[in-house]
Structure formats: structure tokens, C-alpha cells
Image (cartoon, rainbow, N blue to C red; front, side, top):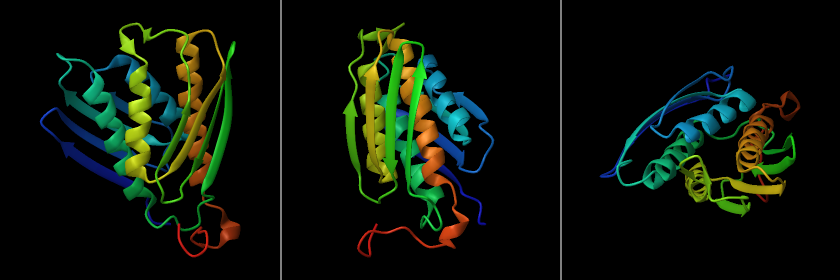
Length: 197
């Protein structure tokens, strides 16, 4: 099988970001975004998705983390789109429920070739440490628009904002892992609906 890897560099007036991914990795992560809680969440994608991630970002953090978080999502989405290629043999759909103590989240993904996000998350508080939880919506929006996937994220319960975020990112990693798994029974077919992704 052709290696499913990609490297993307994206530079704007606000951020300079480099992403390297291996979809068939072991869950290794090297993360330097300058936003510690984002690094913690990206690590969950790698570990639970068995995806190797190497992400380095420099952004205008002297203003706030908005551009950095959003642009990491965009660049990661671009890398996924390139690494997945024509989607030959993948399961296409993936889903996961993940609990952490009182919190429970569900993530469902479709590598459809169409961008769509349904984000049903209300955090119990606005900040986790100094991280603004509203930025996670921007991260996922940037990701789906550039990975060209349909993504449904729902937090079903949770009273601890850290637990809520962690269940979302762990479930996201596991849903990606399921969707991107190559199914030998498909014999290399490219998944489609009515002749197009």
C-alpha cells in the first residue's frame, strides 16, 4: 500500500504552520503550537487515531490564540486531504463514543468529499486554564473545510470542561481511525455515493 503521509506548510500574516502526518502510524506526536492545551488535545488525536502527528506553529499569540488554533485546524485538514488521496479501500465512515468520568461525547465522521460540521457542544465554563473553549469550534470548522469531511460532534453529558474537551478529541481520533482503516474486503474500491464522493 502507498504510504498515506503528507507534509503541508501554510504561512499567513498571522501564522506560520507546518504539519506532517502519517495516517498509518503508531500514535507518535511532536507538537509545538505555543498553545499548551491545544497540544494536549492534538496528542489525543494521535494516540487514539494511531496517527503520527508532527505540528509546529508560530502565531500571533501576543494578541490571542484564535488565529493559531483555527489555522492549525485548517493546515491539519489540508494534510489529511492530501494523505487520504483517492480514499481507495477505506471504510469511509467512522464513529466513537468516549467517556471520561462524568463526561461522554460522540463523534461521527464521513470522508465524503463534502465539508460539513455539526457541533453540538456546550462547555460548562468558558475557559480551561487560559484556553478559550470557543476556539475548538473554529479548529473543527477549519479542519472539515479543508479535509473535505462531514463531521458530527456531540457532547452528551459532562460537568467538567476539561473532561468534555478530552472526550471530544479522543472520540475524534477513534472515529478517524475507524473511517481511515483499509478494509481488504473492499478490494481497493473507492467509496462513493451515486458515482461521486
